[in-house]
Length: 116
Length: 111
Image 1 (cartoon, rainbow over the protein chains, first blue to last red):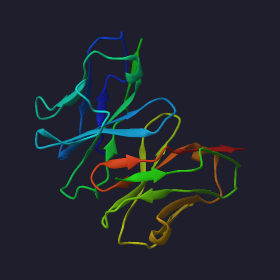
Image 2: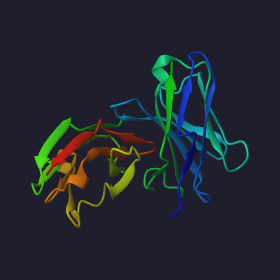
Image 3: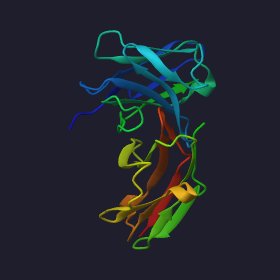
């Protein structure tokens, strides 16, 4: 069964450092997402990406964050100058199809970011 | 704006008990989709079910069943004869564009 793969599974970084989280979505999917889950809390939407541009973003997704699809397969989330409160599990997801609400998102296993 | 409320933070049951997880949603859109995801202790998010706003038929899949009622904006999830392997966090979610999750209900099933 096709899956979304994320690397690294766990990253530890120092406050103020830049972090790049990588995702390989399912190959025929067109829509890509990043979500965040702070430990023990709910899964929060960060950003959606379609046709090489951001289609929607939440209040959380401020100038500290950026996304990119550099080579047609990877989908990356960059966090500039990490803060302690950025410590969380970051989930990548992808979906096929044009109907924005209908299609099921397939999630990756997550990348745990720990900021010290 | 869309919102999903899962009022039950934690539920503990003994194996073989039935358990219902509540979900109430808010949206002004007439076309929307509702989902349930399971997050086991390993951490991944596992899709369970999707319903669209025009289909209020209840659904049963094995020990799982879902009750969608537009009149009360609820999409409740029942596990019949619970098992220890059902222990997980269960998230209800609403999608108009982006998928928005509730805070989740932690279900603990003891033997």
